[in-house]
Image (cartoon, rainbow, N blue to C red; front, top):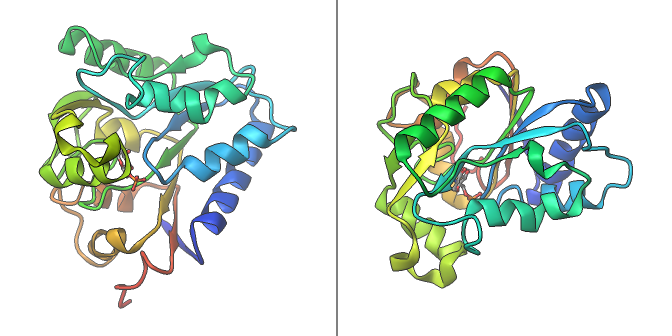
Amino acid sequence: MQLIRVKNMEEASQRVYEIFKEQLTSKKDSTLGLATGSSPIRLYELLSKSKSLDFSLVKTFNLDEYFGLSPEHPQSYHYFMFDHLFNHINIDPGNVHVPSGVGDIQSVCDQYNEMLKDNPIDLQLLGMGGNGHIGFNEPGTSFDSVTHYIELDQRTRQDNARLFFDGNIDEVPTHAITMGIANIMAAKRIVMIICGKSKAEALKKMLEEEPSVQLPASALMSHPDCIIFADDQACSLLTK
Ligand code: GLP
């Protein structure tokens, strides 16, 4: 695990954009693992505006989806991905995968796990929740977990209501489908964007304490190729 300290979200996004560019140039049929939330928005804008990148052979797998939201729902992660990225690049919609937020839970999870087995992720993008979650793997999730159904923490619902859902926590679904931590760890390379004061405590625990299921992001400490881009605010509590 490598930590690269940056000034702000703009610098983090530019640095991660360079990594995506290098990945897509060296392997045209890359499989990308993608994330939602506010952390990747600027990166997706940079990828959308790039004239030189070719996504025609690229496959993508998103980390998670709210359970109970259809793909057409404006707060679904499916909608988010088309809005922020897929509608603006030359990707084949058939190569895009987001877990379904509707349907039979077990078959949604089983199918996603099968697809991930057949399509190893070359480069996985991650953000981190204020409670240390990755994807929607909330504290307590086993490091061996694969795609599963999960109840969202109250803090996660509050955080996500603040930024999305017009601030209304009652609109935020109570459950989600998420890739498990083992699925994430199987990616060949991982890049993470961690910005803002609200992430400082979790980042400190991740980097300065022993890995624990209470902090899902701490699983990444044993990944062979993981780079974290964290800004000054997120790094503000680090002592080492
Ligand atoms: C959501 C997503 C996570 C994301 C997290 C952080 O809960 N499921 O994948 O990393 O939010 O969000 P933000 O980037 O808005 O801080």
